Image (cartoon, rainbow, N blue to C red):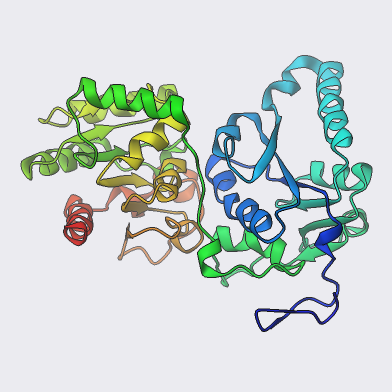
Length: 373
């Protein structure tokens, strides 16, 4: 396919012939939001090569980000708890997964991180085409294990993470059109029914509430409880009903209790009560989502829900709500952001986030609500 043309674009000289590919494996061993941001890769590959059967390998706890995806045949999981089984148990679990992957006989491997498992699978599963990011440092074993490499963004040359994931396909000649870059997360009938029951119990109608997810598994990404409480009060004064959500983790549930102690309003509290699929079903019915840089923010974007996103030390260029109407609220007085640190000086407290005023978040929310009217 050297020098081939697609929509007027010259493809890479070594772009493979995908008509000969029967099965593909996409590997993304990262956190929930990272995994969801790979969903355009599956959509694009299936759209351009519908004959290919596409599987995914992710950490088991992130599988809900991709399960029910219409372009994915099977989602395989790497359980982070395998290492607790002892050396023999861990090796047995890894080999069990490897045997499942080997039985699928993949022709194409797309490895979307620098995790060394991808190197092992590229070497031992023997796909004809194996794509991975080019490492910044010399690594001869890595270089000989893959057939194609895509470049990672340079420092200071930021691109959205979803675009970087798509670079793996660009490298082998699949240049995405703008309408092929959307996020896909399917909640499914069970989650839809469960959320419908929650809304009916609290007499909430579709598009009749604001979904607020104020927590993150990393507390240095979290806005102070007293400011979240003040925001809830202001939204209530404007006549809006607020639904709170959070993961069932102890720190996040404690944060919700502090927020409830800081508000005079009575938000509907679904914190710790929803699965990831139910979270998607909930936010799809909201008129607006408000949250910090976290997986629920990306879930809201996947559902097309207008989003207000609060950013502190993480980069909004790389992690902003993807292809949805949104407003970013970030510090204008901290030139050090985004620093990527876990709080100022590693303190777990990010001043660029904790000092964000309630009024700016409220203004961003009101602007999006006005646009929807």
